[in-house]
Picture 1 (cartoon, rainbow, N blue to C red):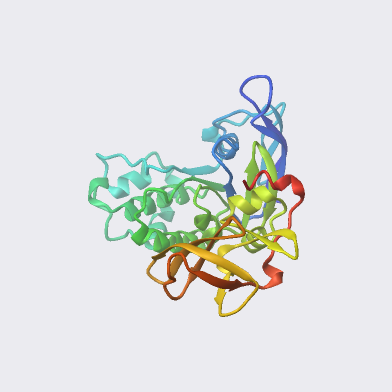
Picture 2 (picture 1 turned 45 degrees about the horizontal axis):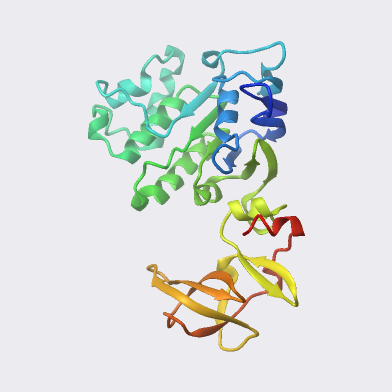
Length: 320
């Protein structure tokens, strides 16, 4: 594998470690997302890979080079790793082209025309950061990282400052750039949609422990436990033949007749459809409808049995 994390342990004080015996690998050119609740260890792991934190045990290997183990620690500036932060740290007194080439080894200057063309910035080179949109600033940061031909690109909440009106198109653009340059990338985000849209695989953390590592479809449709199911999106609790099961809101449909009746408590327009909050057997139920539904009315819902999820009894308290 291209990036190997072997039995990685990280703690700040002796006691419970933030990251516990973590093992995973990344292929060359893959885009991986780390997701999990706040404090789960996502950003700490990113810092360990970047060299901003030393690990306490285990091993980090990138492109056949040991970056950190019990004997070796390569400093951040010596690792061929690019880092893109949430706040696009461009120098305000430098033009776009000077920001991209700041402190750049002359051997990489040959990449400048290609990188400007790839990111669509060739006509903006003389502008200063305050003259650029959020999306343009982000592309400048990407160009500044990729022009150096990094072995790995780390992105920490890179889309959180973008307006929702341009966020989708920017994610598409960045995905295209990363795939075209075959840049191995790790993304940390709290937005599940970002992970689903851009990732080849998703790694789910809880309390520093890897819960699941799989492609977006498998991890969303076949979560290995209740935590993975919940962190990837909404769930409805449904009693089917007396057995507790769970189903995603998008897998529920409104029908004329069924054995599942929902009391409509709220219904509001979302542009393409109506979002509905109701209750079924005293359990909250969320789904969408193509048509508005009357408040305090009972409607029938149905679903495909293949879309149901089942978990052990230990999960019952988790979903409360």
